[in-house]
Figure 1 (cartoon, helix red, strand yellow):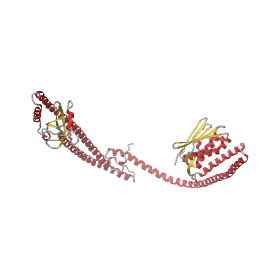
Figure 2 (cartoon, rainbow, N blue to C red):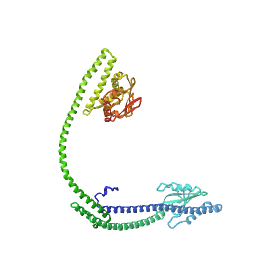
Figure 3 (cartoon, rainbow, N blue to C red):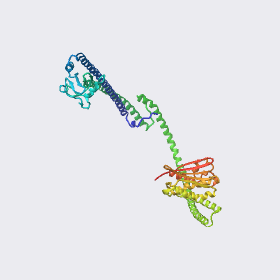
Figure 4 (cartoon, rainbow, N blue to C red):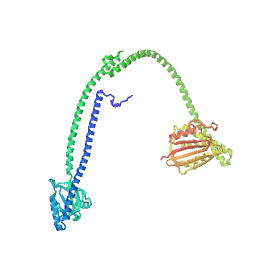
Length: 542
C-alpha cells in the first residue's frame, strides 16, 4: 500500500494543489538559475580563451616587429661599420628606429638599453635617456630592465610581464614586452603591448551576455506567470467539482447515520467518486443489518451477563479463601527456614570450636579430619541459605579488598575438606591484586566453586585455582579433572544438579550466577571428558 508523509494530514485539496504548483515554480526557477550559471561558466571559459588568443596574437606581433628592427640594425652594422665611425653609426641607427614605429595611441614604440641598464632610446620617455634603470622595480616588485636584459641574451629572446605607465592614460597598466639582444653592440632591443585592450573586449562581451540573460529571465518569468495563471484557473474548476461531490457524500453520510438510505448514482459526476458509490451503499446495507443483529444479541447478552456476574461472585469468594490459605503457607515456610537457619548456626559454631580445641589438645587424626570437612560443608550450605534469605532485604556494601589475600584464606578453609575427599588444592595467585566488591558476595562465588570442584572432581586428583590481572580485568579460574558437564548453561538454574549421587541442594551456582549478573561479571564454562574450567572475569573499578 502506498504511504504518504504526514505533511498531507488534515490538509485541503486546494492547499495541496497550490503547494504542488509552488514546487513546480521552484523547479522552473532552479532551471533558470542553472541555465544562467551555465551561461556564466561558458562566458568565463570564453573570456579566458579570448585572453589567451589576444595575448598570443600580440606576442606574435611584437616578436615580428622586434625581428624586423634587429634585421635593420644588423644590415646597417654589416654594411657600414668599416666605413663609418661606430658611435656615429649607432646614433644614426637609434634615430632611424625612433622614427620608424609608433601607433596613434602612443604605443608600439621600441626601447633600447645597453647590457648595463642605461637607456639609449625611448621615444616616449626622453627624460630617461642616458639614465641607468637596471635596478628599477615596478609596483609588484618586478626588476623590469634587469629581467629584459637577461632574457634578451637567450638565443630566441623572451617575454617579461610587468606594470608600466601607459603613455595615453598616464596610468600604470599591465604590459608584456619581448626583448632580444644585438650582441655586437651589447644592446637590448624590445617592444611591448598593453594588456588592457583585451579587458575592453571582454567587458563588451560581458555586457552582451548580461543583456541576453535578462532577456532569458523575462521570457522565463512571463511563461511562468502564464502557466501559473492557467494552473490557478484549472485549480478553481477542479476544486469546485470536488467540493460539490464531497458535499453530496457528506449529506448522504449525515442521513445514513439516522436512517437506512443509499446514494443515488446519478447525483455523482466524477468517475473516481462514482466508483465509490457501489461500495459505500454496500457498506451502509451491511452496517444496518449488523445493527439489527446487534440489538438482538444485546438482549441475550444482558441475561448472560447477569448470570455470569453471579457465578463470578461465588468464584471470587473461593479464590479469596484459597489465596489467604496460600499466603499463610508461604509465611509459615519462610518462618520455618529462618528459624531453621538460626538453630543450625549455634550447634555448628559449637562443633567447629570444639574441633579446633580437640586438635590443639590431642592432635589431628583421620576421623577428626572427616568431621571437620563435613562441618565446613555444612557451614558453606548455611552461608548459602543465609544469603538466599537476606539478599532481597539487605544491601551488601562494596569495598576495596585484596582478592589475592581473600582467595588464599578461602583456599586454606577448604583445604581440610579437600584432604577429607582425597584431593589437593593447587593455587597460582598473583600478588597484590585488588578488587572493589562485596566481601560476602565474593565469598559466595569462591566458596561455591571450591565446594563444587572438590565434590565433583575424580578421586585423588588436584583442584587448581588461578588468579591473574589482565589489563582492566581480574580473571579467576577453577580447574578440576571431572566428568563432562552435559549442559553448561542449565547448571546455573536453581535446584539443578549434574550428578544427583553427589548430594547438595543445587543452589550454589544459582547464587553465583545471580551475583555475577548483578555485578557484570562474565562467566565462561568449558568442559570435556577430562577437564572442567569455571572462569570469572571481574571488571576493575575505582
